[in-house]
Image (cartoon, rainbow, N blue to C red):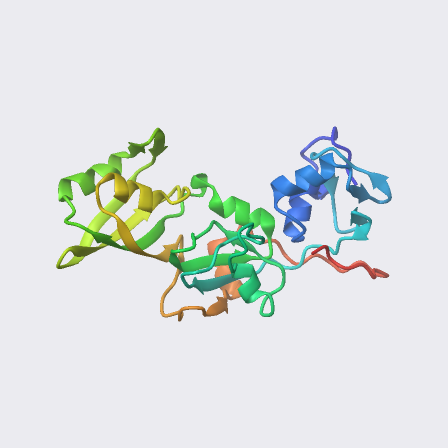
Length: 266
Protein backbone atom coordinates (compact mmCIF):
# COMPACT_ATOMS: atom_id res chain seq x y z
CA UNK A 1 0.00 0.00 0.00
CA UNK A 2 1.32 3.43 -0.99
CA UNK A 3 0.53 6.29 1.37
CA UNK A 4 -1.62 9.19 0.10
CA UNK A 5 1.14 11.78 0.42
CA UNK A 6 3.66 9.90 -1.71
CA UNK A 7 4.57 11.30 -5.12
CA UNK A 8 2.31 10.44 -8.03
CA UNK A 9 5.25 9.77 -10.36
CA UNK A 10 5.92 6.26 -9.05
CA UNK A 11 4.77 3.85 -11.76
CA UNK A 12 4.68 0.96 -9.28
CA UNK A 13 2.26 2.66 -6.92
CA UNK A 14 -0.77 0.88 -8.39
CA UNK A 15 -4.30 2.31 -8.48
CA UNK A 16 -6.14 4.61 -6.14
CA UNK A 17 -8.21 2.49 -3.77
CA UNK A 18 -11.58 3.71 -5.11
CA UNK A 19 -10.56 3.00 -8.70
CA UNK A 20 -9.24 -0.43 -7.69
CA UNK A 21 -12.53 -1.31 -5.98
CA UNK A 22 -14.45 -0.14 -9.04
CA UNK A 23 -12.27 -2.24 -11.35
CA UNK A 24 -12.82 -5.21 -9.05
CA UNK A 25 -16.58 -4.81 -9.47
CA UNK A 26 -17.27 -3.98 -5.82
CA UNK A 27 -19.00 -0.67 -6.53
CA UNK A 28 -18.79 2.41 -8.68
CA UNK A 29 -15.92 4.74 -7.85
CA UNK A 30 -18.31 7.17 -6.19
CA UNK A 31 -19.87 4.43 -4.05
CA UNK A 32 -16.40 3.09 -3.25
CA UNK A 33 -15.50 6.50 -1.84
CA UNK A 34 -18.60 6.30 0.36
CA UNK A 35 -17.43 2.89 1.64
CA UNK A 36 -14.10 4.47 2.53
CA UNK A 37 -15.81 7.32 4.39
CA UNK A 38 -17.95 4.80 6.28
CA UNK A 39 -14.86 2.95 7.50
CA UNK A 40 -15.75 -0.22 5.61
CA UNK A 41 -12.39 -0.72 3.87
CA UNK A 42 -9.17 -2.21 5.20
CA UNK A 43 -5.85 -2.67 3.40
CA UNK A 44 -3.44 -5.22 4.88
CA UNK A 45 -5.48 -5.19 8.08
CA UNK A 46 -5.46 -1.42 8.51
CA UNK A 47 -8.50 0.83 8.17
CA UNK A 48 -8.23 3.11 5.14
CA UNK A 49 -10.36 6.21 4.65
CA UNK A 50 -8.30 8.35 2.25
CA UNK A 51 -9.40 7.94 -1.40
CA UNK A 52 -5.89 8.87 -2.63
CA UNK A 53 -4.37 5.73 -1.07
CA UNK A 54 -2.74 3.56 -3.74
CA UNK A 55 -2.94 -0.23 -3.77
CA UNK A 56 -1.74 -3.11 -5.94
CA UNK A 57 -2.86 -6.74 -6.33
CA UNK A 58 -0.20 -7.64 -3.76
CA UNK A 59 -2.23 -5.88 -1.05
CA UNK A 60 -4.97 -7.67 0.89
CA UNK A 61 -8.10 -5.55 0.64
CA UNK A 62 -11.27 -6.12 2.66
CA UNK A 63 -14.71 -4.52 2.42
CA UNK A 64 -17.00 -5.10 5.38
CA UNK A 65 -14.56 -7.78 6.51
CA UNK A 66 -14.66 -9.78 3.25
CA UNK A 67 -11.56 -10.10 1.09
CA UNK A 68 -11.87 -8.57 -2.37
CA UNK A 69 -10.41 -10.56 -5.24
CA UNK A 70 -8.05 -8.64 -7.57
CA UNK A 71 -9.66 -7.17 -10.69
CA UNK A 72 -10.01 -9.64 -13.53
CA UNK A 73 -9.22 -8.71 -17.10
CA UNK A 74 -11.52 -6.03 -18.41
CA UNK A 75 -14.50 -7.43 -20.27
CA UNK A 76 -17.24 -5.64 -22.22
CA UNK A 77 -20.52 -6.97 -23.60
CA UNK A 78 -22.97 -5.61 -26.17
CA UNK A 79 -26.56 -6.09 -25.05
CA UNK A 80 -29.69 -5.37 -27.08
CA UNK A 81 -31.87 -4.04 -24.30
CA UNK A 82 -35.60 -4.50 -24.95
CA UNK A 83 -38.30 -2.13 -23.75
CA UNK A 84 -39.70 -2.80 -20.30
CA UNK A 85 -36.43 -3.10 -18.35
CA UNK A 86 -34.83 -0.41 -16.22
CA UNK A 87 -31.06 0.02 -16.14
CA UNK A 88 -30.46 -0.14 -12.42
CA UNK A 89 -29.35 -2.80 -9.95
CA UNK A 90 -32.28 -2.15 -7.62
CA UNK A 91 -35.54 -0.48 -8.58
CA UNK A 92 -37.58 0.98 -5.70
CA UNK A 93 -40.76 0.48 -7.72
CA UNK A 94 -40.04 -3.22 -8.19
CA UNK A 95 -39.86 -3.06 -11.97
CA UNK A 96 -37.78 -5.69 -13.81
CA UNK A 97 -34.16 -4.66 -14.34
CA UNK A 98 -31.49 -5.39 -16.91
CA UNK A 99 -29.35 -6.97 -14.20
CA UNK A 100 -32.12 -9.27 -12.98
CA UNK A 101 -32.58 -10.43 -16.57
CA UNK A 102 -28.87 -11.18 -17.07
CA UNK A 103 -27.99 -12.45 -13.60
CA UNK A 104 -27.62 -16.06 -14.75
CA UNK A 105 -25.62 -15.18 -17.88
CA UNK A 106 -22.99 -12.73 -16.66
CA UNK A 107 -20.74 -12.02 -13.69
CA UNK A 108 -21.39 -8.81 -11.79
CA UNK A 109 -21.41 -6.03 -14.37
CA UNK A 110 -22.02 -2.31 -14.57
CA UNK A 111 -23.73 -0.49 -17.41
CA UNK A 112 -22.04 2.21 -19.45
CA UNK A 113 -24.73 4.87 -19.22
CA UNK A 114 -28.39 3.93 -19.17
CA UNK A 115 -31.44 3.41 -21.32
CA UNK A 116 -34.78 4.24 -19.73
CA UNK A 117 -37.70 1.86 -19.32
CA UNK A 118 -39.25 2.63 -22.71
CA UNK A 119 -36.01 2.82 -24.69
CA UNK A 120 -34.24 -0.04 -26.41
CA UNK A 121 -31.09 -0.85 -28.30
CA UNK A 122 -27.39 -1.00 -27.55
CA UNK A 123 -26.34 -1.06 -23.90
CA UNK A 124 -22.68 -1.69 -23.08
CA UNK A 125 -21.96 -3.71 -19.93
CA UNK A 126 -18.58 -4.21 -18.27
CA UNK A 127 -17.03 -5.80 -15.21
CA UNK A 128 -14.76 -2.73 -14.84
CA UNK A 129 -16.48 0.08 -12.95
CA UNK A 130 -13.66 2.53 -13.61
CA UNK A 131 -13.94 1.93 -17.35
CA UNK A 132 -17.72 2.40 -17.24
CA UNK A 133 -17.30 5.79 -15.59
CA UNK A 134 -14.62 6.81 -18.09
CA UNK A 135 -16.76 5.92 -21.12
CA UNK A 136 -19.75 7.85 -19.78
CA UNK A 137 -17.91 11.16 -19.64
CA UNK A 138 -18.58 13.62 -22.49
CA UNK A 139 -14.82 14.30 -22.55
CA UNK A 140 -14.36 10.85 -24.06
CA UNK A 141 -15.86 12.31 -27.22
CA UNK A 142 -17.84 9.21 -28.09
CA UNK A 143 -20.98 9.74 -30.14
CA UNK A 144 -24.22 8.07 -29.06
CA UNK A 145 -26.41 7.48 -32.11
CA UNK A 146 -30.16 6.73 -32.05
CA UNK A 147 -33.00 5.95 -34.41
CA UNK A 148 -35.99 7.89 -33.16
CA UNK A 149 -39.63 7.68 -34.24
CA UNK A 150 -41.50 10.88 -33.57
CA UNK A 151 -45.09 12.01 -34.04
CA UNK A 152 -45.39 15.15 -36.08
CA UNK A 153 -43.80 16.95 -39.00
CA UNK A 154 -40.26 18.05 -38.12
CA UNK A 155 -39.03 21.43 -39.30
CA UNK A 156 -35.61 20.92 -40.95
CA UNK A 157 -34.45 24.35 -39.75
CA UNK A 158 -35.40 23.55 -36.15
CA UNK A 159 -33.53 20.23 -36.33
CA UNK A 160 -30.47 21.91 -37.83
CA UNK A 161 -30.48 24.50 -35.03
CA UNK A 162 -29.93 21.73 -32.46
CA UNK A 163 -26.31 21.55 -33.65
CA UNK A 164 -25.75 24.79 -31.72
CA UNK A 165 -27.14 23.31 -28.52
CA UNK A 166 -30.46 24.08 -26.85
CA UNK A 167 -31.77 25.02 -23.41
CA UNK A 168 -34.88 23.19 -22.22
CA UNK A 169 -36.50 24.09 -18.90
CA UNK A 170 -33.27 25.60 -17.66
CA UNK A 171 -31.08 22.66 -18.70
CA UNK A 172 -28.45 23.33 -21.36
CA UNK A 173 -27.89 20.49 -23.82
CA UNK A 174 -24.86 20.33 -26.07
CA UNK A 175 -24.73 19.92 -29.82
CA UNK A 176 -27.20 17.42 -31.27
CA UNK A 177 -27.18 16.26 -34.89
CA UNK A 178 -30.66 15.29 -36.10
CA UNK A 179 -31.83 14.39 -39.60
CA UNK A 180 -35.01 12.93 -41.09
CA UNK A 181 -34.63 9.42 -42.49
CA UNK A 182 -38.21 8.66 -43.53
CA UNK A 183 -41.77 9.93 -43.21
CA UNK A 184 -45.00 7.94 -43.09
CA UNK A 185 -48.26 9.71 -42.41
CA UNK A 186 -47.99 11.68 -39.17
CA UNK A 187 -44.82 9.87 -38.08
CA UNK A 188 -41.18 10.28 -39.02
CA UNK A 189 -37.95 8.43 -38.29
CA UNK A 190 -34.91 10.48 -37.35
CA UNK A 191 -31.25 9.69 -36.83
CA UNK A 192 -30.07 11.58 -33.76
CA UNK A 193 -26.41 11.80 -32.61
CA UNK A 194 -25.04 13.40 -29.46
CA UNK A 195 -22.06 13.21 -27.11
CA UNK A 196 -23.49 14.03 -23.68
CA UNK A 197 -26.29 11.52 -23.26
CA UNK A 198 -28.02 13.20 -20.32
CA UNK A 199 -31.05 11.61 -18.69
CA UNK A 200 -33.90 11.42 -21.25
CA UNK A 201 -32.10 14.02 -23.38
CA UNK A 202 -33.50 12.97 -26.76
CA UNK A 203 -37.08 12.71 -25.49
CA UNK A 204 -36.95 16.09 -23.74
CA UNK A 205 -35.42 17.93 -26.66
CA UNK A 206 -37.88 16.44 -29.15
CA UNK A 207 -40.81 17.27 -26.86
CA UNK A 208 -39.48 20.84 -26.73
CA UNK A 209 -39.76 20.90 -30.54
CA UNK A 210 -43.33 19.57 -30.33
CA UNK A 211 -42.28 16.12 -31.59
CA UNK A 212 -43.17 13.46 -28.99
CA UNK A 213 -41.07 10.31 -29.22
CA UNK A 214 -42.91 7.02 -29.65
CA UNK A 215 -39.85 4.81 -30.08
CA UNK A 216 -36.16 5.24 -29.34
CA UNK A 217 -33.44 2.76 -30.32
CA UNK A 218 -29.74 3.30 -29.57
CA UNK A 219 -27.80 1.89 -32.50
CA UNK A 220 -24.24 2.92 -31.58
CA UNK A 221 -22.14 3.99 -28.61
CA UNK A 222 -18.79 5.24 -29.80
CA UNK A 223 -17.19 2.58 -32.00
CA UNK A 224 -19.54 -0.16 -30.78
CA UNK A 225 -22.57 -0.93 -32.94
CA UNK A 226 -25.90 -2.64 -32.28
CA UNK A 227 -25.66 -4.24 -35.71
CA UNK A 228 -27.76 -7.37 -36.14
CA UNK A 229 -27.80 -8.29 -32.46
CA UNK A 230 -31.30 -9.59 -31.75
CA UNK A 231 -33.51 -8.01 -29.12
CA UNK A 232 -32.49 -9.46 -25.76
CA UNK A 233 -29.27 -10.83 -27.26
CA UNK A 234 -25.88 -10.39 -25.64
CA UNK A 235 -22.37 -10.83 -27.06
CA UNK A 236 -18.97 -10.26 -25.51
CA UNK A 237 -16.68 -7.87 -27.35
CA UNK A 238 -13.51 -9.77 -28.34
CA UNK A 239 -10.35 -8.76 -26.47
CA UNK A 240 -8.56 -7.78 -29.66
CA UNK A 241 -11.35 -5.27 -30.41
CA UNK A 242 -11.11 -3.85 -26.89
CA UNK A 243 -7.36 -3.44 -27.25
CA UNK A 244 -7.89 -1.62 -30.56
CA UNK A 245 -10.64 0.68 -29.33
CA UNK A 246 -9.58 1.17 -25.71
CA UNK A 247 -5.79 0.83 -25.66
CA UNK A 248 -5.32 3.18 -22.69
CA UNK A 249 -8.25 1.96 -20.60
CA UNK A 250 -8.25 -1.81 -20.85
CA UNK A 251 -6.19 -3.19 -17.99
CA UNK A 252 -4.38 -6.54 -18.19
CA UNK A 253 -5.57 -9.29 -15.86
CA UNK A 254 -4.18 -9.00 -12.36
CA UNK A 255 -1.86 -11.76 -11.14
CA UNK A 256 -3.46 -14.22 -8.75
CA UNK A 257 -2.17 -13.91 -5.21
CA UNK A 258 -1.13 -17.28 -3.80
CA UNK A 259 -2.91 -18.62 -0.76
CA UNK A 260 -6.05 -16.54 -1.34
CA UNK A 261 -9.39 -17.97 -0.42
CA UNK A 262 -11.45 -14.82 -0.47
CA UNK A 263 -14.48 -14.14 -2.59
CA UNK A 264 -15.37 -11.01 -4.42
CA UNK A 265 -17.91 -8.68 -2.94
CA UNK A 266 -21.34 -8.84 -4.51
